[in-house]
Length: 342
Image (cartoon, rainbow, N blue to C red):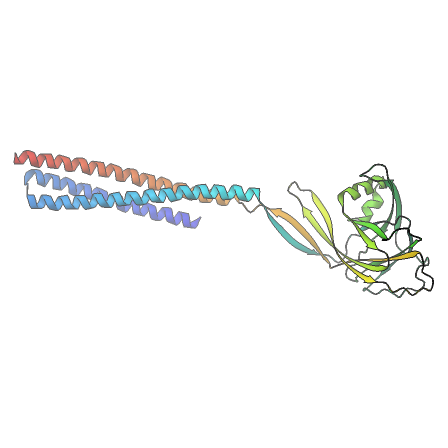
């Protein structure tokens, strides 16, 4: 904005200098006209004619320069408006990271089917004790809810979900370790579906847990972990704030699979599933769309451009009037000289 004010001030000074020069030129032309009417001289007439030609040429050059500046200003106005509209259509995605000592405990919805949950424990610092009796029921030390509801996509299939409270303490690397057992499977490949949602407490406070799970299944993606492996899931949370102000939550996962070494003597016809859920890091990624187009900047630019246009138009108008006036005076002087000679 300061640049535009400096440009306008400079343009005003230039116009005052040019206007004073024009007034002086007109006064000089008036004196030349008086002298030419009194004492006509061929040599002085040629000198005055050459000066008048130079002034006319200089004025025409200035006029073309200011017309060029006006064309550039018009192009800048068009380009500024086009850029502003383009930025409004394509906002920039802003990503920031917020560090937290604790997460809200997420909900882990598992769909075991015919599989049985044997153990569920919370461990810290990524340390999981060796399994004492793999494949045998053990302690379930997690907060668990069981929900039955209708599949929201088919409205016919009944689904059974085991909802487990996820880890919270990210500083201590809290994790949830679960073991499932599936006996006499008739499939070549066996897996358990699961999905993650943002708040287990919100699930507990819901008056209709079946409808709550139906809405979550339509909003979140489902994943699988396979039998015969230990699947380690490291979660990260992404919060996206949309233009209308609504906030959505998304889980991103890093999944690593480690082979389970079977040490049981009788392990025919059954499958063991091991899965670990842990937070990846203490940073919540917040995504927000930002419109970089600033209307005040555009208004300031347009004001400066329009001021330059008005100044250029005034000077061009003054230059045209001055050229016409000089031309008339030159023709008048020439006719007076011819009349005097005749």
